[in-house]
Length: 334
Image: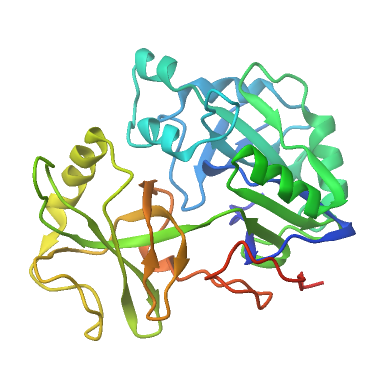
């Protein structure tokens, strides 16, 4: 089977009920395609094509976890917190370690949660309906070996699934049409509904630290549109001392004199600018009318996202980004 891009969900603002849709947890980790050949050889690739095997050696048992080889599955590499919730912040300790030692692996173990099947017994199954692909996937799992999990779903009851995600403190849910084919691009046959506003931003610079803080005060954030990189505000909270040090190590070699933001963007006067190549994930309360984010909190760096692909996510059902708790009736794109 030829290399395949991952299928991406479209953001909508409202949960909904529909018997033709299933609803899963929105896993908070690193997306990965895992291919296992007929001899048990394995590749593990990020959505940008990066090799993830060296960073996550404990996932090697996946080569023995499936029948129906050659096989390609889609899933998420996750680190679980003490409540069993996937946590991208917790996963940060592993993402930037190309070859972790045994202590690092033991401190933050990871799991691979699978939710779709692209190839089975050497046959491309992307044109099969989702319902059939998931049946084949579940039947192909022969050994979990402590690192593999199947992403379970509920059918039809999206509002209840969303309410459960809110109570559990999860990022949100993903809705998928049971008849959808697997396409390697964003689709309205898969939808994501977030409990809180959260997305990726390009880092365009930093501000000087104040008081006893070291390295930097805040990161300058932006998203791309037709005009270029547009300033979206800054984030100065959510950083542990280790985060400040590690992010600064990544920023320093990228420093440049010229602002990467478009001319109309109003950045702080004391800003230091960088080449816009790093991507940060940030949660926030709302978008303001002038295109900035309120109450942002840093979640982590996203090595699996290309800076040029980062745009402002807008709900596609007509609901408001600035009032996420005011749930309107959905238009789910059926």
